[in-house]
Image 1 (spheres, helix red, strand yellow):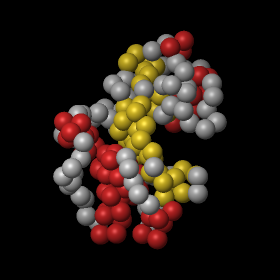
Image 2 (image 1 turned 30 degrees about the vertical axis):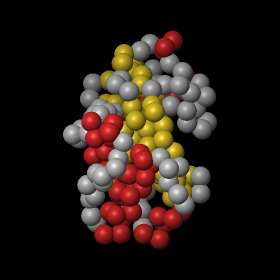
Image 3 (image 1 turned 120 degrees about the vertical axis):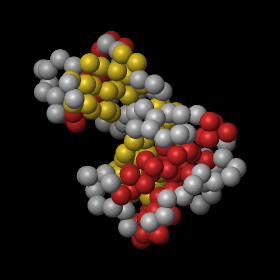
Image 4 (image 1 turned 180 degrees about the horizontal axis):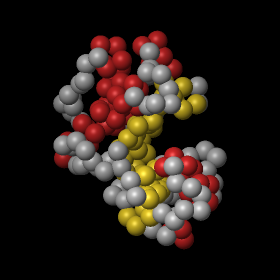
Length: 172
C-alpha cells in the first residue's frame, strides 16, 4: 500500500515502530514544513474492518510541533485507548489510520453547531467531553451534544460550556 498523505504516513510509521519494537520515532526528514513549524491539537483514529480500534488526541497542542503531536497521539491511540487492548503486531496490516488536525476551539452556542462541519467540546467544572465532527450516525446537534456530555459525565439537563472546532482530516 502506498501512503500518499504525509500526516497519515507519519502516524502509521509511529504506530508500527512502537508496536513492533517499543521505539518512539523522531520526525523524519522530508516532512512538509508545516508539520515541523505548526503547533495544533491532533487526533489519531484507528479502524479495523471499518470499526473503531483506537482514538486518542489532544484538542490543544502539547508538543513542540505538529509532527511530535501526531507521533505521540498515534502511539497512544494504538496502546492506551482504555476502550481497547493494545494493538498487536499481527493487526497492523488490517488497520486504517486517519489524522484530524484541530483548529483552536472557540466558544459556541447550540445555534453555532453543525455536527458534519464542527466538532464539539462540552465542559462543566473539571469534566470535559469532546466529539470529532462528521462521525457516522451523528447527524444532529442534539445527538452530538448528548454523546459529548455522556463522555464527560455531564447529565443531559446540566448546563455546560460549549466550544466548537473544525478539523483538517487526513485519511488513507
